[in-house]
Length: 639
Image (tube, rainbow, N blue to C red; front, side, top):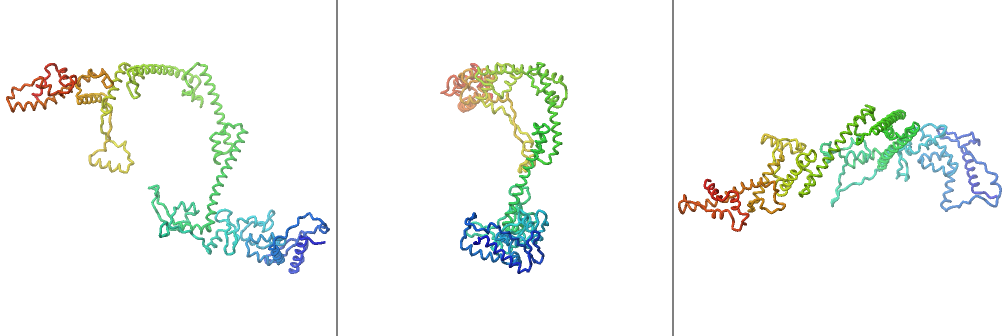
C-alpha cells in the first residue's frame, strides 16, 4: 500500500522523537498522567503524545474523499527540508535560540509542527517573563506560565519583560528596530534607550527669505502641556521667557518655551514621537470614556427611576426637579428619598387642584363677572397654601367687580372724549398729537373744553410750522456735577482735576428746560422781524388766507407786537435821513426854522417800487393817525 503524505510526516516525527530519546537517555512513558518536568537548569523531559493511526487508513482504497493538496512552488519545497531539520534539533538548542528572539517572533515556531508547538509551550522563557513582569501565579483558569503571560501580552515589553500600562505613552508600543529589522513592542524606558542610540530627526523651522536663517519658534505653557502632555515639574528644567499677555492687560505675563526644547523633553518623557502621539490619544480616549461612562450612568439612573416611579404610580412626576437632579448627578440623593419627596409633592398638587376647583365653582355660582380669579390676592393664598377662606375670596371678588365696572365706565368716557376731540381736530385739518399733554389731560380727566383745545392746537400747529418755536422754547443752563460722566474714562480724571484747579468748581454740564410762553413771545418777535425784513408792513388780517397765515386767535397779540415793531423800524429809518437833512440846513441857513413835510417823510420811509398796501408810511398812518409824521419828527428831534 502506498504511504500518504500525512503518514510520511508522522513517521518522520516518530524518527525525530526516537533520536531525542536516545540523546537524552530517557524513556518516555506514554500515559496521560505523565507531564513535562522543567527545572531551573533547563534539563527538560519532553513528552511526545503520538496519536494512534486509524485502522481505516491502512485499508487500500481506490478513491479518497480528502482533497489532494498542491505541492506549491519550488521555493516552498526548498524550505520544507530546513524546517524538518529544525524539528530534529534538541529542545535545549531550541530554547537557547528562543532567548535571542522576541516572544512575538518565537511564537511563530508553534505554527510549524506539533513538536515545535510543544517545545514553545514548554520553554523556560515563559517563567522568566512571568517572574520579571511580576504576574499572578498560575491557577485553575490559567494553568501554565505561558497562559498567564499571554493573557497580559499587551502590557509586557518584549525587551525587558516588565509590565506596563495598557494605554498611554507608558504602554508597550510597536516600533521598527533598525538593528534587527523587525517590529518590536517596547515600553517607555526601552524606547528611550533605543532612541538614545538612534535619535529621531527634528524638522528645523526656517524663516522665509533668501538667507533661510533658522527661526526660533516659541509656544505657551498651556500649549506645551496640552499638545505634548508635560507637567509643571517636567517644564521646570526648560528655559522660559516671559512676555506681556496680548489679550488681557492686567493678567499675569505669559510663559514662552522654545518649541525644540519642548519636543526634546517630550521625547524623553514619553519615549519618542510615537509615545507623544500615544499620550494624546490616551487623553482623548480617557475623556471620551468618561463622557460615555456618564452617559451610561445617566441612562441607568433614568431607567431605574422610571421603573420605581411606575411602581409608585408617579410617572407624571418624572419632570420634577428632584428627578432631573437624580438623573444628571450621582449626588442627587437616594431613590427612595426622591420617591418620598415626589409623593409629598403629588399630594400637595392634589390639594391645590381640589381647592382650585372648589373656589372656581363658588365664584361661578355667585354670579361674579369680569373678574379674573388670578387677579385676586386671596385666591392665590387659598389655592396654593390654604390661607384664608372661600368667603374672604368671594368678598374680594365682589369688590374687584365693582372696581372693574367703574374702570369700564371710565374707559368708555375716555373713548367718547377721544373720539369727540379727534373729530373736531379732523374738521380743523389737524391730527391728535401723542405728545400733547393738553389733549391727554382732556381725554383722561375732562380738563378744559374741546373747542378751546382745538384753537390751542391750531396755534401750536402754526407755531411749529411757521416760526422758530421748536428751538426758542428750550432755554439752556449749566449744571455742575459728575453723575452723568463716565468716571472709568482714563482721561476723565486729568480733565476734571484741571477744571477744578483752574476754575475752582466741577466741570459744568449743559442742560435745558421747556418754557412754552416765553418761547411763544420770542417766536412771534422773530416772525414779525422777518416779515419787516421782507418789506411786509401790512396788518395780519390783510394777508392772504392760506396755511402760513396765523390763526385769528393770535391776531390781538400779533397786532400789539406789530405796532411796536413798526414804530421802532420807522425811527431807525428816519434817524439817519433826518441827521443828514439837519446837517445840510445848518450849513446853508438858520437851523431854527427847520420844517419837514409829510411828503418828505414818506420819501424817506418808502421805496418807490413798494406796493401801496405794504408801505411803511401806510402802516404808520393806520397806527398813529393823520399827524403821524409830526409825532415822529418830534421824537427824532428830541433824540
